[in-house]
Length: 124
Image (cartoon, rainbow, N blue to C red; front, top):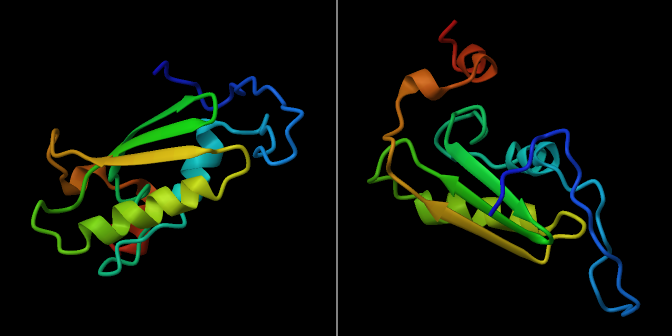
C-alpha cells in the first residue's frame, strides 16, 4: 500500500448502490489517528497513539491497515486492544475494511511515548 500524508485526502469514488458505504473524502491519516486516540490500554491511562504503540497506518481506497505493537509481548490485553483499534477504524465513514497487525520490531520502549503521553503519566 502506498503511504498517505496526513494532509492528503484519498479520492473515493461514489457508487449508485445505496447499500454501499458512503464515500469519505475526509479519510486521512489524521482521521485514522484520531480514531486510534480513542483506544486505550486498560492498564495505562494513555491512548495507544500517545503511548507510541502505532507504528504505521496505510490507507488504500476504502481499506485501512495498521501496524502496532504492545508495551510487552506478554501483554494479556493485546488481542482486546487490537480488536478495539480495528473497531474504531471500521466505524469511520467510508472504511469497508480495517486490519490491525501486531508487530514486535522494533521493540517498544518508553522513549516512544509522546510528550502528551509523558505529561499524562507524570514523566515530565
